[in-house]
Amino acid sequence: MYKNFWSKHTDFWSLLVAVFDETCHENHISWFYKRLKHLKSLIKRKDWASSNDIAAKCKSLEVQQLNCQMLLDNDPQNGELCSRLKNINGELNFYYSSWSSWTVQRSKVNWLTKGEDDLKFLFSKVRNRSSSNAHALKAFLLGPDSNYQSPASILWNHWCMGIKLFNHFADLCRNFYAILKWETVKDWTNNSSWNLPSYIGYDTANELNNLLSSIPILSNVTSNIVWKDNSKATYKDFYKEYFEREASVDWHHFVWHKNKALRFSVFSWLALMGGLKTVDALARRNIYMTDPICPLCRCDLESLNHLFFECYYSFTILVKLIPNFQYFYLRPSLIQSLNHVGSIAGTKLEKQGLLLTLNATVYYLWRERNNRRFGSSSHCVVTTTNLIAKVIKYKLSQRNYMEYGKN
Image (cartoon, rainbow, N blue to C red):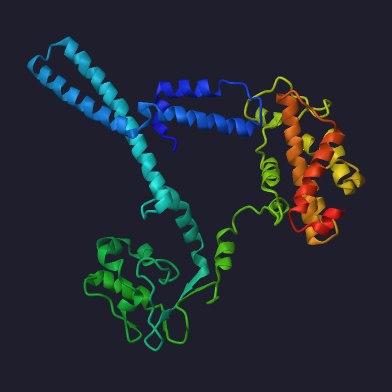
């Protein structure tokens, strides 16, 4: 695991520069993976890479600090000792900071893998979403005639006028938290009436009675909490409610369909999300290419929409692979191409085959673009088309496309 305190060592940056200061002569992802693996092996050999080294340095410096302070007590005007103590304190501050960084990082990893009640940075959004979705919960208080009385928690469930009791009586809940966290609604009721605990003060009890008197205790219901008036709600109901406020992504089934190829779909997804580093995308980050012209057609400026599929090179390949696109009056964008394939008449299997072809076209066009811009190789339209067609035929032969693949 990468440790944040490594970045404070100049030796780490020297290793990083040395490892990546080589020219790439192969697939970029493969080269990057090998470089990272080599960097990892070099870091493991360094003493500063281990947290044990930090602990040992802290202990050694603390001893030096104590000895220096003892000498200064006998000779407080000694400039050399003062300078030495200042240097020790500076080193201690450095290693304390590194140790603190590692402790926080390790704690967060443990929290993320095992979970903790006080993991505020992770659960804050979940709690906020839970509060916003509380309107979907409807609670009933069950009386003694039911099979069981209300098992809702006094503190945590939304039985009290649709919200938690804590929202009404925060001081009471804080003062008696140790008791209330174990109690349920049935502990506060007796024979279909409210029976408040004796430890609640007189004034608070009157306020509680005024509030609780408006909450009926029922005996003719089968469930004490329902979701949107549905006592048999499923996980799907909760899931839809949780994400109903998120932006709708109506193209996801074009990219992540059942018979997708992950390698191809990932690049289509990156293109749609603006993750591909085209010339225009880099310019928005204040990174400017010396040659902004599209390397495929050498006619127009490179942009995401131009590559997919305003470019003559890419559109010609698209038409050769999916002839239906030849009827377009204007060359489509990637999202328009996906929507068009989705609207083509045919079986579900045929559409998935066309989507697989379209996503593969995006992948190989991007690879061809990189080869031309950063490498020394290039392929003509026919060669690239044949390469994509060959890969698609192989993919189809490995799946349930036997009849479709023959076409």
